[in-house]
Length: 166
Length: 166
DNA sequence: ATCTATTCCGACTAATCCACTCGGATATAA
DNA sequence: TTATATCCGAGTGGATTAGTCGGAATAGAT
Image (cartoon, rainbow over all chains, first blue to last red; front, side):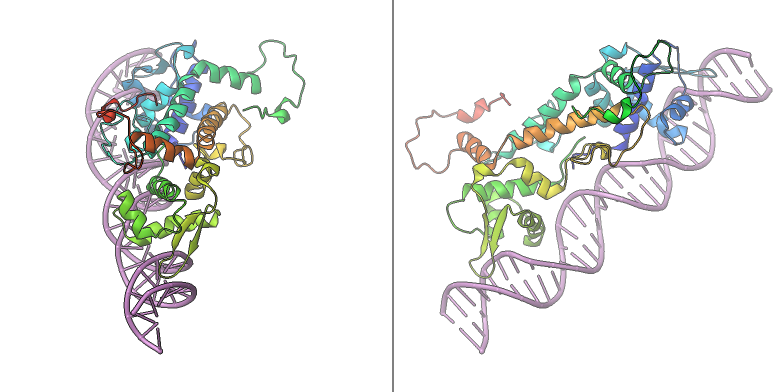
């Protein structure tokens, strides 16, 4: 229950990829798809980036050697923004839609559940809005360091520890 | 996004109703449906209660004058239990399923998003598990006091304040 | 005994939503 | 002018959701 769709999944992966390559100019969808293991027709990714672009989270240049880039540094893009762009307002229940509480659900009887859903929604949004793309990139760098530029002091088998502290 | 289905919605309302009438013996589905404004065939509610019963959250007696009752006091039933019974394990993403992290998603590459989903899931579960049916009943009593047994000191227009503190 | 109210159960269905695909237009670098 | 991109809207198959339907089993009331 409480699933986020593949739009959210792929879209976030895509944004993380853009964040990783923030300093390298534009990046095409085929590049991203290959790098992130998204074995999909490019057109599907286009659908995802469309709403990201409309939300001004990314910018594009068309034509050969074109592609996408983040319109702000990764550390200034909250995951909440990303997911809202991809999947619309966060609302575990119709009566708990962001910004529209009470407008939609006008049940006056004992709708005690409303507060439950509102709390759940707040828990989700505050979690998402407290993390940025920058944070995600940093985290993944710790778990999976990029092709050694610097000398890496970390021992092998790092992987098996797989931090349960989440 | 991140919706809970109508099973969750109706099921929770149903449980709140049972909690409200915890001291009054059993309660039939038709009674509950009417009280909670669930205009549905009884058979649909039966489907919901089935999994609640299988999760040992409610008990039933069959036959005339039969019905359902909570199997524990409302304050000892966490909302997380209720929703898990109704909708299965809480998992915003398949790779972030409760209790099965890492089992399902074995991507070893930079799956930085995994931690994101795990955090979201934790936010949801800890919120749900920190509230009980008893809490919900109490809250709804404050907002909508039951047919005055005690003298009520509260002024009119209570309703328009509609506590934004959620 | 029989009638009625209720829970129990499995199969079925209509509608919605999701996860894509397809075909083509437009823009830009080489 | 060609190759490589982004852009755009329409269409589609499958999965999931939200419910219906018919009937069996159980228990109290008459």
